[in-house]
Length: 66
Image (tube, rainbow, N blue to C red; front, side):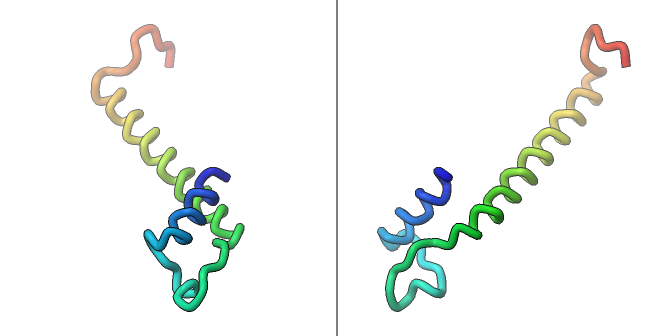
């Protein structure tokens, strides 16, 4: 929800404007939350994958039985 509030503050302050806000300001749709959630989920998966590759390249985790 923080991202949605921040996005509304940013559009109200004219930091960026969506096409439907060119004539008059209106709140950003709550449906945008799903887009932000998908972006955060994808970012988390990518970072976790990169970290896993670094661990494997470094020789694994000590004490691991896998």
